Length: 140
Ligand code: CMP
Image (cartoon, rainbow, N blue to C red; front, side, top):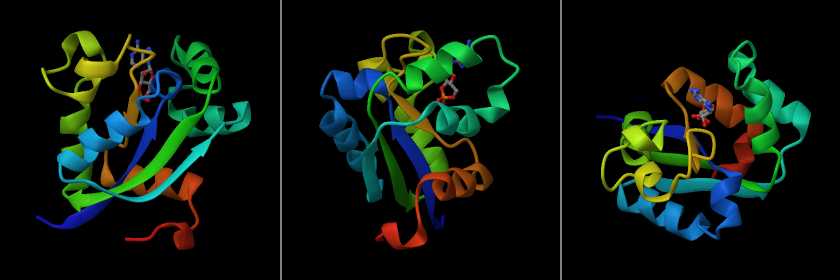
């Protein structure tokens, strides 16, 4: 299995509860290395563009409002088969469906306030990483 990269967001519900360290620890214990990280406040324009694929979904407006409601931590993660590994440790989108021990099972409050985002494919990971990071900000 090749070493690859994925993109992660620690969402406002998690930063508000001071869970940045706990979430990052779970990622690291899953074998993922944080090779870039910054705490930012997303603008409405950024959140709308980042989630543009969901623009027609009924939850789009609430999703954007939630993602700009507080700081987030955007990260690039590196490891063996990073996209799949990260999805495994995050757990299902809806915490009610997430497996025991996953980040969303442990920390998420709802399908919206679900503590983390992770890329769903290597192609999207590359796009999402480039959305928030310059190549020089990623230190592997
Ligand atoms: P995320 O991986 O960040 O991608 C889109 C987000 O929309 C998702 O996580 C959820 O937090 C959020 N969301 C809110 N409502 C829904 C829903 N009904 N179905 C899927 N995603 C939802």
